[in-house]
Image (cartoon, rainbow, N blue to C red; front, top):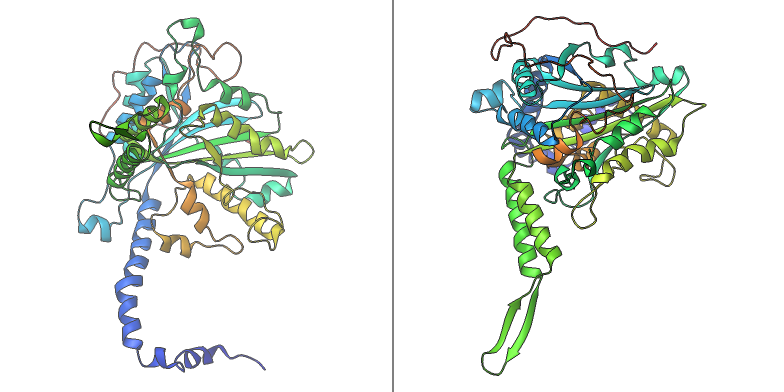
Length: 445
């Protein structure tokens, strides 16, 4: 028996709950679903209207600044955050808080540092970088992703394999990772640069291999989830929870009767200090996304899975926080992984989706409705959206992404700027636009 699509409305209205209460369902659609559809549309239009520029950070042989300088850069980026301030900007313009991308990439062992920023913010970011690092060269370049295939299946046709993923925090987001403050020492010869392990990993791949690391940051603001107020409230609640649940001992005295004595351990006190230090500094919604591509004959899956995770977990502490894999987002798909069906098809669409997200530097959608509209077969996209976005403050971001210091630049790890700048260009404008076109890097062929 064949099914006539024209019979679908008749079939639906054959149910009394639909037929008798259709004005209610129509009213709920107008009140609940229609506004979400409109918001998803205008926000997507706003995001597609943003013009972007890509900066390459050309680093000289000696950078004497500590990651504290990069913390100040992130402070400046946070200070120029935007959001919809009235009904028109929110519901008609669809304005969302702009985001930025910090990238460390390796093309066959040649390492480059990039920052991708909205064109309207380029002068602010340049000024912040030159103010803290007057010796580096901030150069606008062509987006290296334009020199690579637009979709992952084109890589497969050329014999490449891929592993990609997004990292998440192992504990609640109010707990910090270890920061550069733990790597500093009084004696200069004992100082460590936490970015050294990342550079070593990126520089030791084979000529035809690629590793791309992308750190997307969006200032935490009241327009997005979580809002800054929610984040600070979570931190304060966690501190109060530690106070209530730890260090209390019931004692009895013949003179005073039963009483409670507070006796917290040093570790419990450090927990509270760590949470308070994190929530008191400006914070960002963050996605850490990476991809490892290699010809099939040299592809090592375990290297792709573990290399960047191991690098990032030099900032791990078992008593505060660390990074771990988001298995809902990674490109692995096997029969014993949820939802246990069609592993080959799920793996294919996971690779396609992750590559697309990396290429577009895409943050997760502000609304579940937009995620629903962008669903793909065998890869719905709801679980990665739920887990991948974490919160890091400026101190944590400066730890995992900053120009390498002189401690690291002792070998041919990155492309350096041999000349040393005396300061930022005198004509650098803070407001307005610069029309400057510079060639990009040599691409993939």
